Image 1 (cartoon, rainbow, N blue to C red):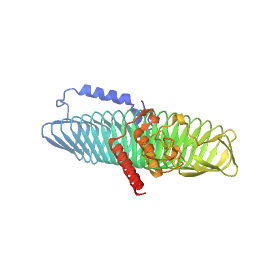
Image 2: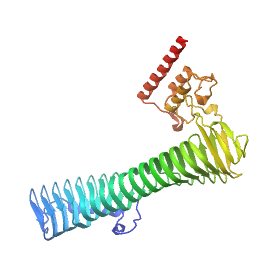
Image 3: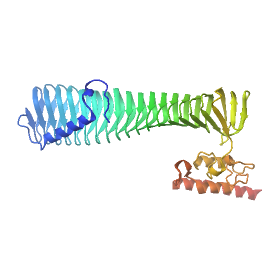
Amino acid sequence: MLFAFKTGDCSRFSKALITLAAVMLLLISGPMVPAARADFALVETEHLDVTTAHEIGTLYDTSTADISSGSVISLDTHDSSTVDISNGSVDSLYAYDTSTVAISGGSVNDDLWAYGSSEVNISGGTVGSIFTKQSSIVDVTNGSVSCFYVDDNTTVNLSGGDVTDLYSYQNSTITVTGGSVSGGLYADDVSAVNVSGGTMSYLQANGESTVTVTNGSVSSLHGYNSSNVNISGGTGSEIYTYAASTANLSGGDTTSLETHDISTANLSGGSESYLHAYDTSTVNVSGGSGSELHIHDSSVVKISSGSVSSLSTYGFSLSALSGGSVSDLLAYDTSNVAFYGRDFVLGAGLSLVGKDVLGTGVLSGKWFDGTSWTTTISMHDPSATIWLISEFDVDSLLTGDANNDGVVDTADYVIVKRNFGMTDAEWWDGDFNGNNKIDWGDLQLLMENFGSDTNNMAQTIPEPSSIMLLMFSAATMLRRRLWVAKVL
């Protein structure tokens, strides 16, 4: 994928040109021998303090050079050589093999290329453009870099300083714990970006790249293609998902979230002020809080937990509510809203025709797990549909799935344990064998199906530790029941 670079010297390059230049450079270099026209060529353990102007310099073996003043137009480091730049300038620098480049001041005016297993440490000064290939590592703790291109299996660690634009490709890894990316960070292919600090103006995830944000600040984040964005902390102003990208939010604070195309957003924690779903995108809310949720076009939202202050539905969208809380509902156009629960109570202004709710007013009830909820329907277009689903489709029930979320898990076990011994029980109370009470038979059915998942259309095998814990708890409940019966 070719990026449309924004401004500055970065506009001179594309991914194809970078790769071509790298190949040509390696072909031209060939077997390394001291260059005849080099101003200096260091071998073995030789050392040079660079204080004057030089055209070309080359380091081999374990040789070292300190640039504290003066200048070098082109500098190559090979083998395990080391160059320290604390002042002065280098126009172009090429690091190969296991060589090390340390920049604490001065400047690399044009390009710095890192190949092989070379290491570049930047703690000050300025660098024009950096290109990393193969397994090289670059650490930036201070200073400034105009353009950064990270390719192959290379690693970049940014804990300070400023990078204007940063591009990552293939299997590269970028870790940001501090500093700033003032222009933009662009992740492509299967690269990985980890942000746990610092500030970032713009972050774009493409291809199958993965972006993980645990702290820090990202002003604008865009997910494309099949990229994955995971946010568990920090702050973000805007998040946009397109194509088949996925955004998982389990923490942090986000001002605005938009989903487009067939993208998916999963919200299990954190807070979102405004959320808009468009096209055929999907939003799953299982935790966290949101101020305003707007569902457009043919998008789908599923709310099973968490809290939403206001839910507005438009177009042909579908909203399924089976848990959590929605304070205010506004249904427009031909949108559809379904409440999955029981013990519904229709307030003044509401009426029920079959399963369809008509009018506006206060609607309350209980979810299948027994949690009470209240929603105010403040807007209801005549063409919009709001319906109540209080009966399970018996043919589609999954034995052991008390809360009807398609999975037999610990949440269902908690329901059975809480209601154990109940009479006049229903399915959602844990009565799986239909004898209207919660007993050992129901618990045994749950144990037999523990881990089943209709959402994946397959039986999933639970971890042995989960099975043992469930069996131990069930056995404890049975012993307690037998002991009570014996006493009575």
